[in-house]
Amino acid sequence: IERYNREVKIVNIGTVLQVGDGIAHIHGLDEVIAGEEESTIGIALNLEPNDVGVILMGDGLMIQEGNPVKTKGKIAQYQ
Image (cartoon, rainbow, N blue to C red; front, side, top):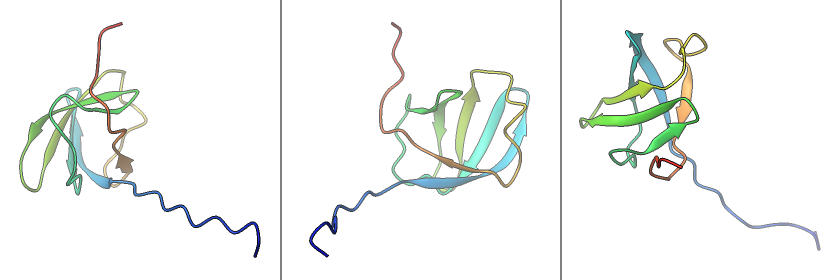
C-alpha cells in the first residue's frame, strides 16, 4: 500500500473505420487537433465530428479496419 501510485493517465483512443489510398478514417478521437501526429505513421488532417481523416506516412499495411489507434498529443514538425 505504501508504494501505491495514484497517477491517472488519460489516453484518447479511436477505431479505424476505413483504410485506402494512404488515408485512414478514424472514429472516436475527440481530442485530436489538425496536424497532430497520430503516431509515427500518420498525421490528422480532416477533423469531422465523428470522423478524423489521417494521412498515413508509411505504407500503412499494418493499419486495418477495426484497429485501435491513439493520439500522441503533439503537432507534426519537420526536423
